[in-house]
Image (spheres, rainbow, N blue to C red):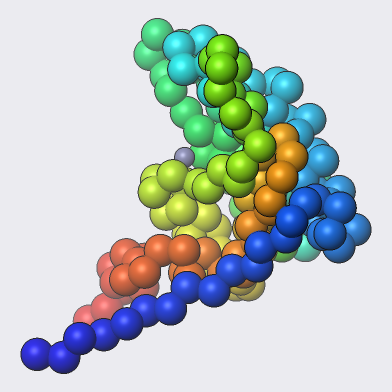
Length: 163
Ligand SMILES: [Zn+2]
């Protein structure tokens, strides 16, 4: 038996003001997306904004109704898959605002496991590591480059194609 270690490296910024201009712009678009969320049960508003290789930015947010509960990142990816045969995502920013009384929204939010898997597949399809910017309304910002780094021992399409 041999113990293995997987390292995870990410950047931590003390505030969005320390980000480069492109990342800050994308995060501000994620903040706009937060205002379009409609999570009627959780009241946990999440927004996501992605920059594609052509420089254009797309936004989405989380939705909840009696039959559907979907994440902002998932909605954004499904939308992109519905309008493009193929796309390369350069970066995605995710933010949130917890609308429940007495809660704090000033720490980074991170994509759930399902969304990491969806982002991983978008990264594989795009052929380029995606920059993932994670933040709250204010405070620290986390940035990770490459979704594989956020999903150790990831299950990917490559496994389906092995002989
Ligand atoms: Zn999710």
